[in-house]
Amino acid sequence: RREAATEAARNQYLYRQSVTIEEYDTRGNALGNYREAREVIFTPAGERMEQFSEKPTSRLQRLILTDEDFQDIRNIQPLLLTPDMLPRYFIKFRGDERIDGVECWVLDIQPRQILQGMRLFEGLAWVEKQSLAVIRTHGHAVPPIYSNGRENLFPRFTTLRAKVDEHYFPVRTYADDILPFKNGPLRMKFNIRYTGYRRFGAESRITFEK
Image (cartoon, rainbow, N blue to C red):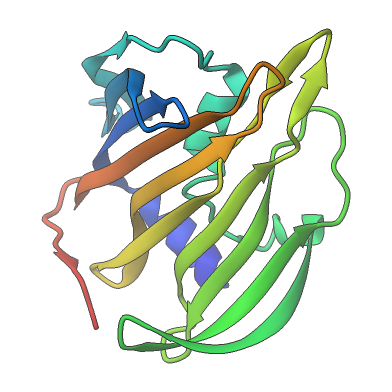
């Protein structure tokens, strides 16, 4: 219920999503990067939409960004575990943990079944005990894709949330992982920032709580 309320609230907010993806060889030498920024806005008719505020620029040498990558940026990295998503997952209690001074329950999240074309999350979620809000997730998007000589691999990432008005919205996703491609491993870093949250037609503020 808390996640459903968070999703409903976030759908009423404007914000900026900035994406930086970097590739390195295993010695740490930079090879290339990709950058873009989108604004989630509302039209005068009140319809929610996205527009580029920073035109995508790609200087990647080995990485090829796919539809699945952009689908994950939109849906998996800022994952909200709403009631309609829960039947897709096995969720187990892992224990208690204190994160940044906040007492949390830790949940293990595993897909029940992955059908063709589905993008799902596999990993952990930290739920603040007091508010029952998810404040952090860590894992990766599944499945990897191997077809017709094509390898589409996905890094492990962490997404952090912060309190915006009365809800916890994603504010940053980051990753630093080595992808084991057949033609040689490749280190991939990415950073996604969600900034400037403001309710459509109202003022909002973000607070970081310890």
